[in-house]
Length: 245
Ligand SMILES: NC(=O)c1ccc[n+]([C@@H]2O[C@H](COP(=O)([O-])OP(=O)(O)OC[C@H]3O[C@@H](n4cnc5c(N)ncnc54)[C@H](OP(=O)(O)O)[C@@H]3O)[C@@H](O)[C@H]2O)c1
Image (cartoon, rainbow, N blue to C red; front, side, top):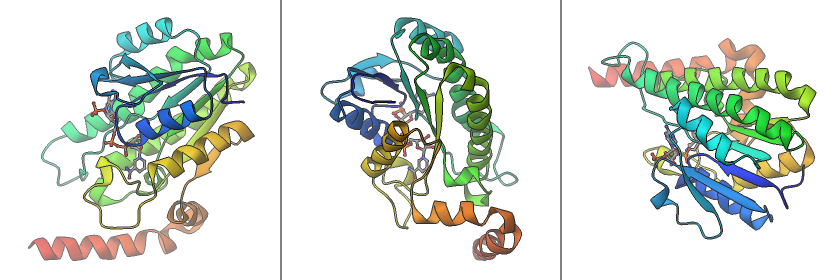
């Protein structure tokens, strides 16, 4: 689909990657960009329309879908990462918060906007996933589980909406230079580069974006994950556990 002339809605558009998505849409000539945020007063990007939305509230999601009935491109970007382990975390709170936002919030958005997209010619959904959709890492364990669930959801929504002509794009990335990865000391890609790749994919009708070398390597290694992906993570984790004793 063409971005120019489309009507788009981006969740979590007040900062980080969401702001870059909104900016890129405006620069590609989208007719309207709804910049959804929990605190819309924090949306400072010129040329976009701030709109209040917490994606974990299905009623609110439904109201926004009714209000933004001209949307043809939905960008599910909002997400949380609580750096929580499966076993060592003090409670299930972080795991639940990540699942509520990254999986159930994204699912609510897809369900509410599916008929809107159908009414507007099919359009497209971009779901912001992660390299963590492909494997588990103890440092961000429950986040990875939520992104794996969101990857499964993305593949399923693509199958269910094929008949109405909706393109469903999965965007996977390793570290992106935003607040979420602020404490990470590793190579990061810019949010602008991820936004460009995502919308190039939308315009080309591609269903998957692997935004950096590490993400491409991990995806290519999945059939041999227990030889190639997990041993170095195990070594790193064991050293961290030993270091903490
Ligand atoms: N940064 C990375 O390394 C990286 C890598 C791969 C994938 N991702 C994914 O990229 C997406 C954007 O993350 P980011 O890097 O831009 O992180 P970020 O800087 O922490 O921004 C997260 C955004 O999501 C919003 N948000 C969180 N919970 C929400 C909710 N319940 N309803 C509505 N908005 C909510 C936040 O709003 P508030 O300002 O109100 O908190 C904020 O706008 C996420 O899905 C993340 O998982 C990030």
